[in-house]
Length: 431
Ligand code: V47
Image (cartoon, rainbow, N blue to C red):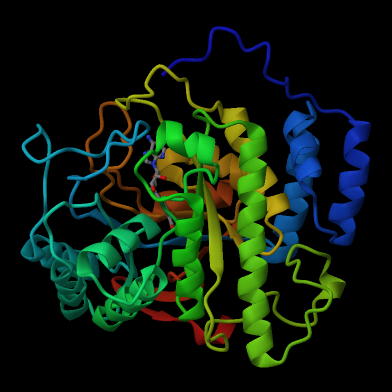
């Protein structure tokens, strides 16, 4: 993956005062919501420094000097997938070179090893396996639960959930099937949903790059139903392929609208007045206590974190594309922080952003989280590396400290963790 031969059409990053940003800066300072037009201005301005400065301001309001990480383990239980999305280099058909499907026993062993190493979370996703029955998925969760009772299982993208609703033939209709499947998965051990599979909520882009996959409205239905059931979820945005910047900003606005509805639902259930709306990124004087309901008090789910994912073209059918540049990645995370004023966390997923760039995103780009130790990762790979993509807690600490921030270990629900070797508990004192 090289640099594009002609970069002249990209805005040059310059420090300086772009007057077009004055009105946006005033909104950010007073905690006013940004519009789609503001988002586009933030993309078009050459003054990337100011974009980052504003993102850093809201990040500090929300998280002070804390940057979050976790001790986790990703597990891709199969790469066999019924879909053939152009952007994906992970999926295989059965019999293809490199195709694999882990057994329940493999998953059980991985859970044991994760627990022994002190992981607090397993992040479990895979391809849409054409023959596994629904029971395979509940058995897999139960196996993890048995081996590692204290590990939080964050599993299955919305795309997998829709697939499970179809194969299990649960429910009277689509929404009821999803609700039933989520309920049964939760009984088997599911703790929350990861943010994968959202790609970009735009039908043109969808039909060119992810045809066959569920569209944005179906992705959001799954997350809405999860929130109604009290299951927390995350949200991604895959950018830097065939979408444009406007489609990214619209994607953010759609997520923001859905989060408004989730938080409103929570506030209504608690009798909390939200006539002013919920903009978590505003100045401190707007907040009497916490900016968010804590997991202990909130019986509804909501989006905890947004994870902008830079497209990595290697080995995909879109390999002729270049993928986004480092500055575009920095800008996108910063704009995400500014636009998504009601989502508490912004994650720089170091596996895809790289550790050095994630560090920059923490220091100046509005990110407050870099995911975790990961261990295995198969969806995207760095040239020359296999699926073993692990970092250590001490590297994560160093990365965060060098960015001038304070590393704080979290569990999946962003509760601080107290650790003694492989032993850990949620730190109730600083919730
Ligand atoms: O759903 C696939 C994306 C996602 C490529 O919830 C690609 O905390 C870049 O969702 N280049 C999986 N991206 C990753 C994901 C995730 C990661 C970390 C944390 C969380 C969380 C979620 O990766 C897929 C797809 O959108 N993806 N292929 C690619 N070539």
